[in-house]
Length: 106
Image 1 (tube, one colour):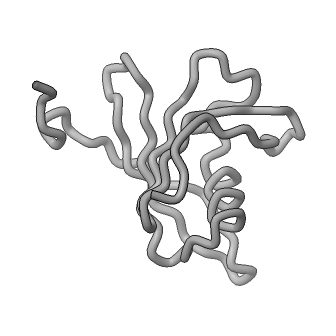
Image 2 (cartoon, helix red, strand yellow):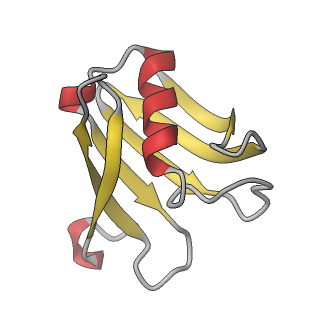
Image 3 (tube, rainbow, N blue to C red):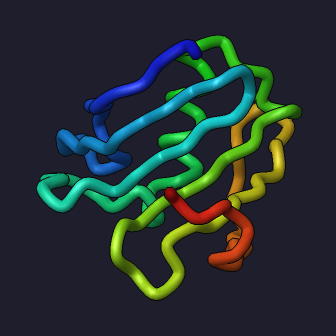
């Protein structure tokens, strides 16, 4: 595991934002925090994905990005990004993950 914990970053508007971040190989799990003072992880997902990949040296063409919102109707979504000519992520494409995808906690 490369990282697990609260992660602070600047959103595209230059404001401080934070989320919970877990990085395992090229899998990144991003959880929205209720006390996030900046832009939501959904509204800045391509920006955050670029920052995380650049900071931790992740291969953008092999990235698996999961967004998590605790307590929402659809708690989990995978996010796919296209890479532009400059090697930056473009607009995201979200896919809901069905609740039965993850095993129930015991």
